[in-house]
Image (cartoon, rainbow, N blue to C red; front, side, top):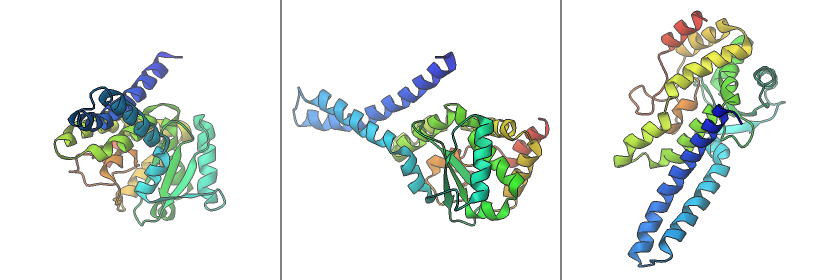
Length: 253
């Protein structure tokens, strides 16, 4: 196992351990209040581990429900399916599960907890607005980083800790979820260009989304998974660099 793989595994284990501790803490407090001195700690640990295992196992489908994505087959969107399979082969990853979000918003997202193929969802607005070159670039942006653990880390962090972003926990949870998401967006742009071998395609895609609404009614904690910002710029979970900055960077590639 390489050093980067060990680091990635350690990051994922850290997220799982933090979530288990957050779940276990109130259980421990209640057990101690009930004077269950000998059972308190073992009970809290078991509940924390079980709840976390269940939530990790169901992350991909839970994210799909949270963003209103419906899974489709290759025959439902043959153009998208063909491009996704081609880009996946170029990126060295498995073909993704495909989803569609019924919305006039022009956007897309990918997610995956690392225990199955990447999930890729595209809005109907994006499918209507994008020609094959633009759609390929958007798919590349989302599948290029799938060979690293960055997508799994972002997915797990957003899904596991998003519900805890309330009151005094908001700041720490936002920091935990965001991590280096802004850098991850730029990294995904560069990985997408590497997969498609055509930087102008992604530049065109960014120009396109600049001309359409990209907002969606989705949990703000999932913002980092999207191609373009789905939430307001002043939201604490906003992570996307300005589109012009992303375009300027790609023109230098």
